[in-house]
Amino acid sequence: MKVLIVHAHPEPKSFCSALKDLTAETFRQNGHEVQISDLYATKFNPIGGAHDFKKAANSDYFKYQSEQVNAYQNDLYAEDLKAEMDKLVSADIVIFSFPLWWFGLPAILKGWVDRVFAMGFAYGTGKGVYDTGVFKGKKSMAIFTTGGPEVAYGEKGKNGTIEQTLFPINHGMLYFVGMSVIEPFIAYSPARLSDEERKKLLEKLKSKIENIEKEKIIYG
Figure 1 (cartoon, rainbow, N blue to C red):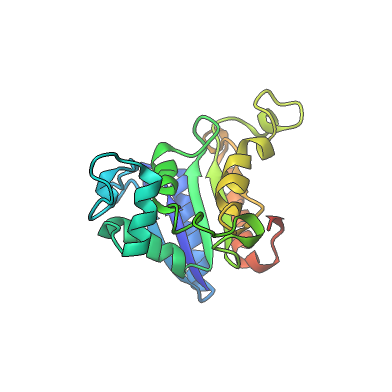
Figure 2: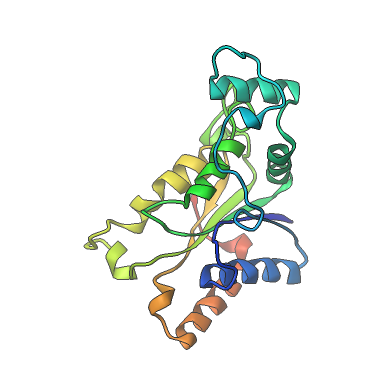
């Protein structure tokens, strides 16, 4: 199985990065091929624009989605962006690794989605969505940390449920383009945990990765 981990944390020594490292190591130990797009380490540009394309279809009026379609149809994507698209196409499972910031993805990862899940390539121009999406047959999963404790995301939590928080990511991004979405792995407020508690979280994640084929699918 080919695995793509898209990682978005600025500190390599963070617990979030430790989750990413363990995920990659466990997949590799079980014979899988792993690619990592470490967005901060590679200084990935999250801003979509004319630089996404080698040549514009309309030099008088810039319409991003139209240019995405034209670039896909005429092989005009910039090399850095095409490399990320190629990784996505080759992957059997896509992992988003990130800290939950302001109830969503860090801007650098949201920008990766904006640029890589491009119209013409990932959806649109007659392509299906959800159960008939372009990437049907692939699996996906979010692995992330939070600042707040688990109780804050419960039924009576002030933050709303974690399912509500993740809906735009799991349903509106990953499932929208056809991928089956595995129940996420969440490390609630690791900064407030003891070393032993964090160790148990790592063990829990390792077990989840080792049994990934049996994990619950929440969409798809």
